[in-house]
Image (tube, rainbow, N blue to C red; front, side, top):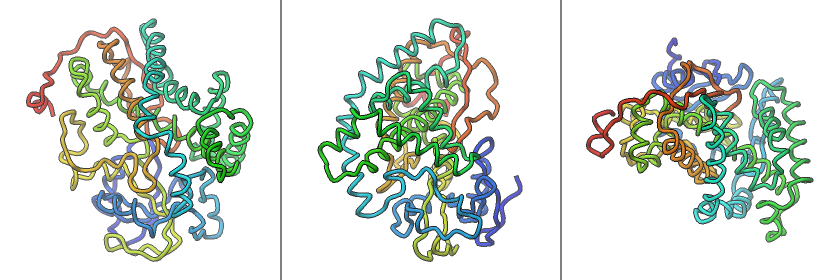
Length: 406
């Protein structure tokens, strides 16, 4: 692509998620690390792409999550968030109060208690996959696993889960009409308030009478959307990355102890929120020499930060033996760090461990190209595979030997 204009020149460059996103972000990071862009052809924002800037911005109190700080120009109201729910749009004491309450089901101990159910669901899905010569690992595993897990947590009946998933897709589609997104969000909130009464969120509410009905329903909506769409994208990206490098997949079949590190490494490379998380400038501020006025939308690109060569050696290549003290930002940082990060990692690790153990000779059925799922999360839309492929040469997996195929 043509290099963006230098930092501070403030051009409005169009930016879309999808194919080639990381290449575009890399060009911004090198030539214009703080720059104005237009998202989806209509929403102006300042884009941050360097790891140091993004990491500081995630904890900077001058950058708020509440879009009431946004100063919209005439005709730009549609840029305001229509999917702002619960914690996503709160700051300060209000955010701290609600997060402290909602975080309790997602402590490490409670997440570990979900493990038997996640394993049982994964085994059921892989049972079905094994009965056929080919499969689509998105539709057959990466989507249904986190969808069923979060619906179990929220008390959503099995027959309602696919319709509920379709509604979340409508909300998250960037090209959809803002009013249609808002209407769909209201439908889901009404559904959760009516049909999902005996779940973890209402259980919390029973012990915390200061939570309003609206806060409880919005919390359920946040958990529903973030609890399966992001994890679907993450699991899909992990499997695609490994299957595009068959020797890496085979290494995991021979040494399952590498799986947690593989999940973390590919989360860095292909985090589901690659384009970024949104904040709003509450005052005039300067980042890396560029002035951002108050009332502006600021997009913190987690995907660009996690591939910054200033922080990571050979950052665009998956390295299953990588050891680094650098912080991976795929799940955020600071007060808005993803509540479900531990659950997402566990689901990804179990899915990968089960597949590599039970289907060691797995291969892509076709060249994947650049097909990505629609929406704001970054991951493959489908992942067709053959189950009994010709075995690939395996690679040594000891710490010293792994360095040979970095």
